[in-house]
Length: 273
Ligand SMILES: C[S@@+](CC[C@H](N)C(=O)[O-])C[C@H]1O[C@@H](n2cnc3c(N)ncnc32)[C@H](O)[C@@H]1O
Image (cartoon, rainbow, N blue to C red; front, side):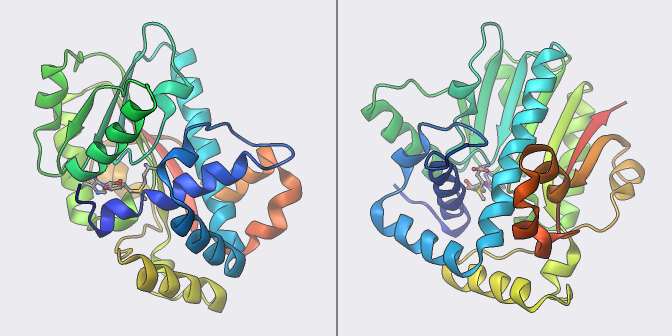
């Protein structure tokens, strides 16, 4: 089972979700997270987090905001959820709700690994589409598994945009919007200052270098002005904010730990008008 560098980035968020279970007041539940990471990887991530604690903090609030967005969408009646670059995301189980359908999309090696682990534990994975979503006919693949392309569909795009060239992001959104007119897309993104090492924050720059050096995948795209999604992709921004805003909603006492990421890691929810 071949997991490449980009695929291997899925292990870190699993570690973050697993660590949450040891908190006195966990911000979210993911009883499956520990299934996907071995002891060696856990130790490696704990070393990273020990040196750069804010990397864990910002990833925790990313989980919170995606959960909030999913819960709100389901409360609004959305019955289709597609997780792009799903990695070891287990929301299909955690938020299982009668009448709501989930679908994972990721590289074949990542999905094969995930499914092997789940099947060994007796958990049936949600439907999945293996492949590079930038190249697949994703709407066509969703239609094949009976997703209704005209119905409201939430695309959770967590921990992905930083790895993709900006032009490919915009082209992908254009193609998706053209065929799924009721789409909602929730994603997190970095500031270009992280990518360009111009945040002025030396710890941040060192953390970026450490991440790229040790985990093999590069962060290539950041955004500092979301209006590009309205102008270029004709999508409406229905919500956006910094991870610090999410932290203030869930655990304001943790805000100091996140201070160095202020303005550097944010989220956005787009909707086709
Ligand atoms: C940082 S991980 C995030 C995983 C998950 N969304 C989470 O937050 O736990 C990025 C995931 O996106 C997948 N990915 C990135 N680009 C992709 C692409 N173009 N097509 C399919 N999967 C992709 C990787 O294989 C990896 O599993």
